[in-house]
Image (cartoon, rainbow, N blue to C red; front, side, top):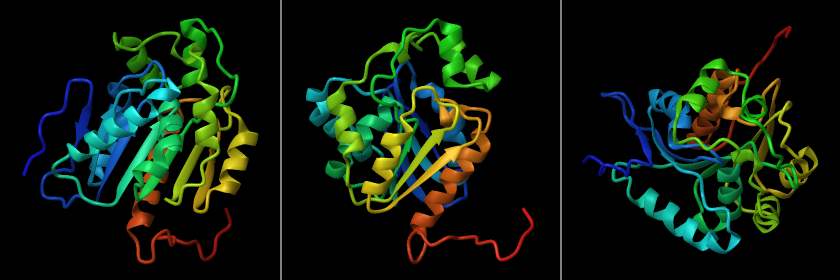
Length: 250
């Protein structure tokens, strides 16, 4: 069975022909981005036999969180060829919305990438915004060439109520938190508190990465880290390391 064609605002990626799909990943974009911003990430996960759907950035009104939950549930239900495990990936405000809504959605796993901190919005010119987002020349070209990308998106304040819900989560599903150590919008103290509060979590810091941690210079290593998380969710027992180093000198 093939899934229905998604609206133009969504992007779909499927496993190569002949490979059995290993799970379903739904990605929610962040401020100023479009689903096309995650074409490289989606294609890379799909190449590892995961079914991927990328959704646009959510509305930032806290009162619309129930509507976001409903629309995300509908997007998941609309993937007719989905298989478990189901993993939600959010970036920037997509991460805020997913983090705030995860208890209601109950996926098998969650990846929150580039969670913005409190009061870290700023008014930036486009060159400064690109520098805050990514130093990957390919992704900078993707953002600049996409006429649907909104310059100044990172200057849009994130409502404190949504940040409170995301950073105050104690949801059960396993979480992978990703942050760049050069992310000017990150709140490492708040991330540390979240990592201590979640019952099943790994906080991974990406050396040299900026706010768009899924799309910076280290995007290959980050995508591989996400795939490692996806594969661990499928394991028996879940989350047991698939590969362990026995000896080494580095």
